[in-house]
Image 1 (spheres, protein in one colour):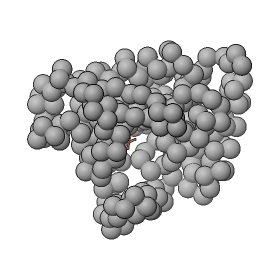
Image 2 (cartoon, rainbow, N blue to C red; image 1 turned 45 degrees about the vertical axis):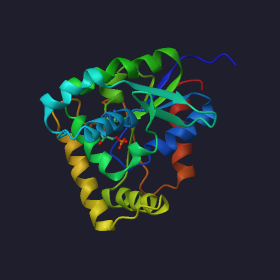
Image 3 (spheres, rainbow, N blue to C red; image 1 turned 60 degrees about the vertical axis):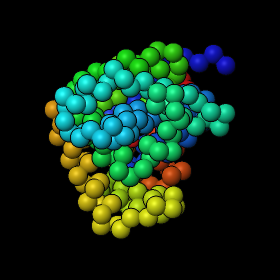
Image 4 (cartoon, rainbow, N blue to C red; image 1 turned 135 degrees about the vertical axis):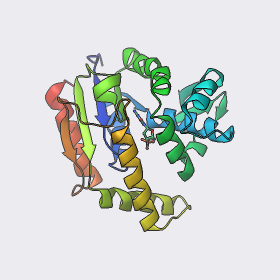
Amino acid sequence: MNKKHFAVAVDGPSGAGKSTIAKAVAARLDILYVDTGAIYRTIGCYVKEKGVDPCDSAAVIALLPEIHVDMHYAEDGLQHMYLNGRDVTTEIRRNEISRYASDVSAIPEVRTHLLEMQRQFARESCVIMDGRDIGTVVLPDAEVKVFLTAPLEERARRRFLELEQRGTPRPYEDVLREMEQRDYNDSHRAAAPLRQAEDAVLLDTGDLSFEESLEAILAIIRKKVEA
Ligand code: DC
């Protein structure tokens, strides 16, 4: 089928369900799903391995030339991340990497370094891309923009269950505190902070099931483009 070229930008805080929903939308519409948080996580992973403080901008910037990030899609459609040729898809999901990713993502040079790579995906394919600044900075001309959110406690509860299912349980109170901290970091940094683009549609998934959220976002997309 000949599909019109379009991009869907999905932004929002962690735990709002961006990746699960965006992945399902991609499968339903047969378009590419790009998880941009995974790219920041890959940088965070390298910074941690090198024993560098992720808040030390100069030290992190000095590492950038030696970091090669690649992304490939496996048969199952899973986005695999490669750090200098090594598959780090599982590793980047570790809890401590979340903080490293959040800290390095506040460094403007890191963001600029990754900008072109993200835009390239949208040039080459119809995409649904999720992150924090997709609708505001990476793809300001995206045909569809959605700001996905949910109350903090609900997002922490989802993350808590996810960690449990993954076999790496953490106390709910810790998960809640870390999520609150990450929300603060991501929305208060000077460089491309998390915020809703003016032309984005707000979708609160707090009271919605997965299926309801999926249908809601598909309806938003269909209203804007012939998908
Ligand atoms: O979506 P995530 O939790 O995997 O993202 C990890 C971190 O990366 C998050 O704390 C903020 C940062 N990030 C960002 O700054 N911009 C993006 N487009 C995506 C993620």
